[in-house]
Image: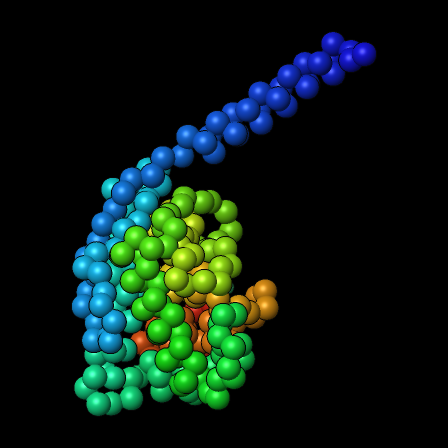
Length: 237
Ligand SMILES: [Zn+2]
């Protein structure tokens, strides 16, 4: 039999977990449709993408999220634009130089020769995921609200045709004064986890998923000997 003290404690704990559960269930999401910039790719692409944004984000946060999405997608558009122009995309040169490990996503069975080739596969994966989102073939993509010691994070996934581009964004990250490149790279990193790319916890250097976002963050410029990777990797999950 419980003493009165224990019963009170038990009631308090039950109440707390009930509130927690209620909070989780009551998170509401607002549908957001954004235009998809046109990229010179072989397959038919949708005109828009759809995301479901947690209603706890303020109007300023939502604006920053839209800007981050546009910046991330621009890296994809720019790659195909440069490719169509007959030059090796700057992004590809950057990856050829720095990406050495985990060049293949989990769904890709062949061996990838180098970092430059790995970006081709990565870009195709993103093309597939964007098409699946816009044509409604993939699961709904949520922009979830989260606080704690992270900036943008995503749960590992492995099927760009069906898995969503769902990520969790820390509102504090959106409030920081950062360049568009930093934000775009951070989201790119999270999306690549969704697309089947992996890295050992806390290790980013020379991993395809780490170098790709550092390339975006540095605008595809070479690394400087005076600059540590942590300047960029601090924003990756
Ligand atoms: Zn990561």
